[in-house]
Image (tube, rainbow, N blue to C red; front, side, top):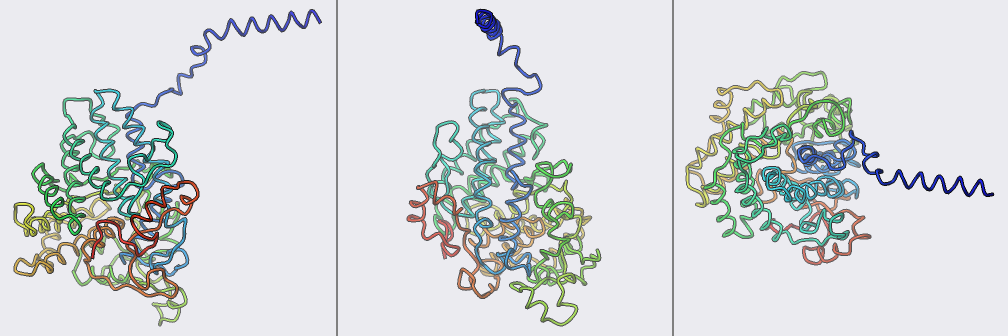
Length: 511
């Protein structure tokens, strides 16, 4: 017994003598206790594209299953899953962006913002993070309406595990303020995270112009609900300096190293080694979009579309009818009774290294044309329209196209700006081009938001049996059903905004 006690005391003494150097001895030099801010910036940038967790999960559900289908860029006969084509609800599909954004991109961006605030030398990382957060929150609020914002992502920092839902009006006001302040703070004389900047490679002036063009996007979104504020912010954006060329387009660049965060999420969903939704005939280009491309003699058709055989001949492309299920398709005459015979995104459209665009110079110029027509911004609307249209043609070269200036001029000549037309005719021209461009670059969520504000192009809804909207294109997606059990603040949001339905309009979406 005495020997055992002596042994225990000896061990205690030995352990005690070791613990005074425990922290030093047990530091793993290959596992830093604090992650470099450059790394966090790069990771957060990748996350805003729809990544986080299962590769491409939320871009698949929100961008393809709902937005692409509702905007009739694409179509699918698998109406029990690709529900956007017939306006029906499935909880995990509708809530995907909400459920993945908060624990991934929002949490990481809030963490990055708070860490970079503590070091004045990191003003550029701080400013970039603030802009990225606006981009992510912008998608969330445009898709769902009122969402957690001011308290979102702060659980680990403040213990707020049930953040309040901010009114979209307040979210917009703060996003515009954030863009202005972050743009002002960007500095060419401070540390520039060139390698970690997966958008502009450290070009501060491009970041400034991108922030201003995003400001214009959100300003124009308020056109129907608060014209005075929309005009103020649109003018401010233009005065500060908008994107000036295709090179200013805001796009996240990927390393093309396979799955996870290194591959373009849209591409991963379509890629045969990923989800393979294109090669499995899950989605095709929609008849509405293909017919529009043919009618407008759009040279992008030969870049974006192919038959299953690989044939990209424009005249041979056929869009899948909108709102058609497998039974309805099978009743058509051959060869239109098989989805294998319809056009789908060409392989170059799902290269894993493709840039994923958030906002393009095309969008910036088209919105500028509208702002000029409304008398909010100085300039010539036709010039802005022409710039936007030609840039939209050339931008597709980012996805494997080889279109030339001559191709762009020919397309513009076939689709000119109606300088002597009515305001409605001008808005139709501007926003139909917006729809054409966003469709070709797989920016379906943004196309849906712009369509809800403007009503252009004029799309014919479907009225499939059992749809949730009485045959109208949805105005929003429904919240995560899991929120009702964990966050009581959702009840106040529903009471303020309206019933949690596809047909409830968000704040800026007025008739």
